[in-house]
Length: 445
Image (tube, rainbow, N blue to C red; front, side, top):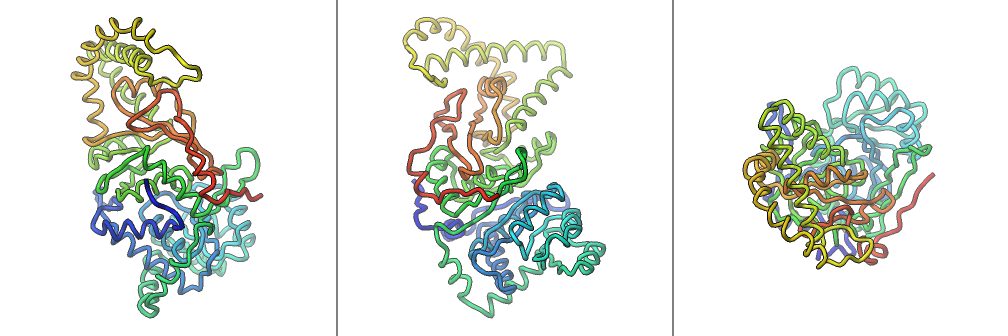
């Protein structure tokens, strides 16, 4: 079981880096569409440099820093850096509406905001009259002359991410030991993030989450989603959503790598074939789209191939239903008499087995190959996982585990075991220790 007691997120990752400095940590696409790799040592060095850059701008412990970006390698590098010196992030996506950005950034009085794109910078600069505390923007993408001019007119200074790294290297050289002092000051109960909910029931609510909130999750989640150093996962969801953020900590805490991709069918399948991930975190719609894509491809093919596909899917679903009853793999709100299912299903279950095996050999095996050579499981969260999609993947021999949680629970309440799945539910909730180990999440109006 993972030891997270009295740690912070950066200190936990620092321990992983010391044990696995040369292990791959992040895969990002270059201009030619190929994946470039950063090791744990390289990723951590960028975090250290970014921390030094923030310290050179007199960032204080407890200061809130906006982080308006989709998932990319720089997101974790910047976030680990600011968390290491005691600051906290206020994350949101680049597609956030101006009204949401105004509310979030003004509510948290951000002096510094990290922004991914020029389009997002323009939205923020248009709100400058409502953001009197905003002084600096750090950009992941290269700022255009238009954006630099707009910022100058607004009295805001824009720094490219690489420039902050360069300032950080100089600061750390002039102040040896300062980073180590700052990361050592971190406490379990320090605020790590204020994550604003979607606001579907009104204005967004800011949920204050501590390092302990995030770390407590890892004690049991890493038992249910067990990974091994050197393996990798495909990252396709917005990291400003607490579900994906926690899953990334599950990945990094086990010395695995993240390959940054897009939840677009063709791109996703190409990247899965290239990178051979062991897990794919996704919302239910991602897995539903995969099922629909396969169905659509079979309908276009038509003829005997379509008939065989439909026949073997029906056989596999029926066989899987009986198998789950016989081997107690269904959610059972009431106790069932398992021997009764064996008496009813043993003969048809046995007769259907060769047909299911044949379908696996000529059809299902090819579908699984689309997911890569090492694929172990999908992780469905962020919404209700449809039963028909669950049945389809289960019948094809592709594991997809369902999880449940809320931003206020940081976020995982329960998730199926990859090795011991139970159909139709997100498995049992975690033990009581996860409630008292972490600081209680607070909703800020």
